[in-house]
Image 1 (tube, rainbow, N blue to C red):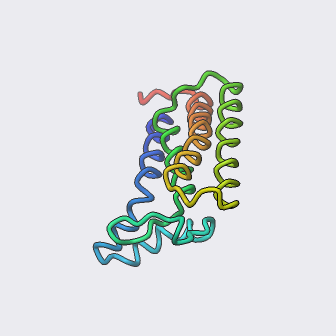
Image 2 (image 1 turned 90 degrees about the horizontal axis):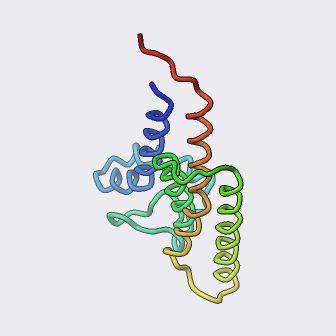
Image 3 (image 1 turned 120 degrees about the vertical axis):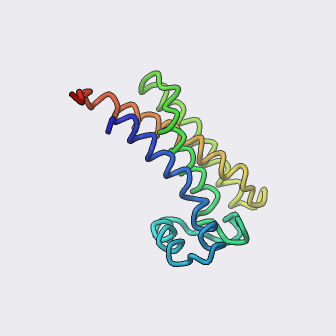
Length: 147
């Protein structure tokens, strides 16, 4: 399998991951849903007020973690724009500052939990990481002929 195809497949799987557990719960496939939720239960607080519901079930991760997952996955799938490490680090610094600002203002009670800003700041932060990883993997593997 070509590295680019594998990276895109991984990205698509990560894009589907947040929606699959609620869908599986809705179909009474709770064991499969629990298996997909398990990794997130180890890494994400999953507080009810910070987690979206889909099909009447909580998603396996909070809205910020969902943004991190989706941003990283979109970075893998799209892998654009990548103009070098300077752009990636600048983007991450700006997005990281927005993420911290959103966290601090929410935790200080300046605004309530806004799923849109939690999701967006997570996605903006993780996107260049996915782009950089895709670029590294695709560039590091020499093309092998199928012949």
